[in-house]
Length: 234
Image (cartoon, rainbow, N blue to C red):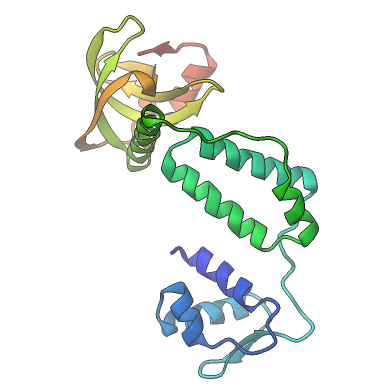
């Protein structure tokens, strides 16, 4: 668990309590050592969070004070909910799960009226996946992982006519165009930027090579090429 998530959960666990919460209970909940809890609480206190208590006694928020919850307008909240639904419907499983848990964290600290509004948003992106769509979501996850790790990929790629070619690519980004995804990459065969349709990728394997940062073929250069309309598919 990231430290930022632990700090958020510590504050959330203390909000509204009338009795002290012991470090041992926090440590069990968070899956960390008591020493880690002591350090995190100390850092929160130093940053101005009104936590009272000490090791061996337990912790509470100072009487008469509370940490205000995240505040959104109804329209902002609706945008978050709708965005989460679209990620769950169209992105890979890993991003979809992360979007779901992120929204749960937000809803946990919302006032009741906004939580009710979130539950009744009437814009949907239904999640319906057969085996083909599940395989496609897995492909999106693999491409995303390669982008994050700067891993060179070996693709067997079909063009719109069905012809297959072997491509070694340096993946740069994924883009969703409303009806289709594309992988933006530097293609070593074409020695230029190319967009690849994930639904046309027959096989995708990492070569074991990590991409070096080169100005002429990095993400910023790719985006300039896209902006200039100089982009082919495959």
